[in-house]
Structure formats: structure tokens, C-alpha cells
Length: 124
Image (cartoon, rainbow, N blue to C red):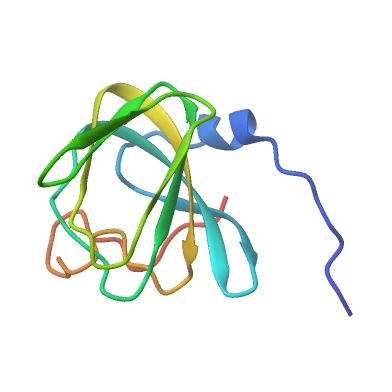
């Protein structure tokens, strides 16, 4: 029997997240996950061998750093980081970010032994 559709209120879900750089699953579709995370400070440089990632800023702003440039994202803007591209998100103040990516995507990509690596994500 199919699941019943339910709306998701992003502000309510982000209010449940007390920490930074620890994505939570807010929804799933077609082998993809909608994840919510709060960013603050600098994350680790990494890349994803097989997955593209979409970052959509809901609140605040952050800079996606690449080795050759940086792109600043404001609320309502998104960026797709193609697989294989090394990147590092940096937020000088807290930012609320929606990520859309394959369910297989590890938050630290090729850095499987980072203290920030999350393998069993909490569901909101």
C-alpha cells in the first residue's frame, strides 16, 4: 500500500537540528534523499566519486570553495557540485541548507575516516 503524502515545514524541521555539519534525512524519492543541515565554520575539503550534490540555501548564506574559486550562496539560491569536483562549504554565520543527493552519498565523500563522517543519518 502506498504511503500517504505529507507536507514538510522546513522551519519546523530545522528547529529540531541543534548542531552543525550533521545532515538529517527529511524525505526520500527515487533513490535520492532530501537532507537538511546547519552549516557553521569550514567543512573538510572532499569530493564525491559517483554522486552529484545539490545545495539549496534556506536561511543564512555560505560560500562553496573550490580550488580555483568560490561561489557565495544566499537564501533561495542553489548550486550543483558535479561528481569528482573537490569542494568545501564554509559559513561564517549559521546557514540552513537543504541537500538533494543520492541516498548513497557520504557527507564527507572520499574522506571516510573523518570525525565528521556520518554513516547512519537520523530521520526528521
